[in-house]
Length: 274
Image (tube, rainbow, N blue to C red; front, side, top):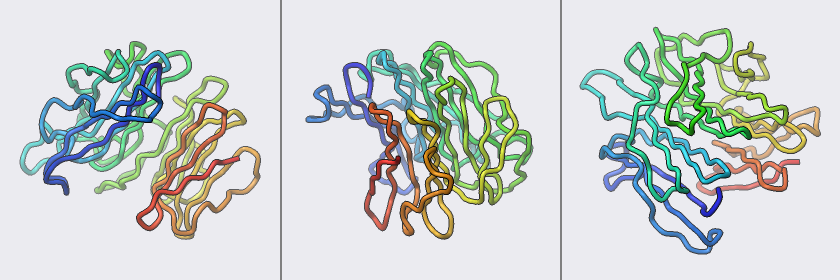
């Protein structure tokens, strides 16, 4: 949600199952009472067929979308690239697609979702899992102009994960109240948290972590074999959200609370964390 509109996005195609896929949007200008099909963000049919993307909103109406792009895929090679587009008018129109990042090894990690967010001071941060010389680590890029240009890619954490496969685990980033960025992500069987440019701290075993910043601190959630757990600033120990839950996402809401949403046996569940 941003000034003037609500915008949601999804990757979809007529054939499905990875055969096609475009990044589509829907807009509401009456606080969600009615919705209308908006612009198609991707300008190459099927380029987003991997199905993984992110969208960030700034309070002034700027939007930025990034996705795993296959437009330059060649037979027999992975060739996944991070591409993006921006909107300056609350999603009515979008820029031409452009490459945000291309790995020197020929492909970023092929099945881990990227994450993007606008900070309070208007900077855009984009995080993704890279693949460089067999290491599948998290990287961050920053833009000071809403995605028109980016600085250099920076690796998160000091260690590396040598892996000849995609873990399908993209992690997340949030802005703490002191203005610093904090990330959470998986390496091997463990979850780590790290500030931008700083060393990581091992948190616990788990996968598919999410993160958000509420008025009282940083919240995280993740999966283990025992179910879906969350860590909140007011409690010493993690809480079990759902023994059958998976694929959680966290978002801060206007009153300062954090809302968790996840999948459970074909349904979507919600819970306000405190």
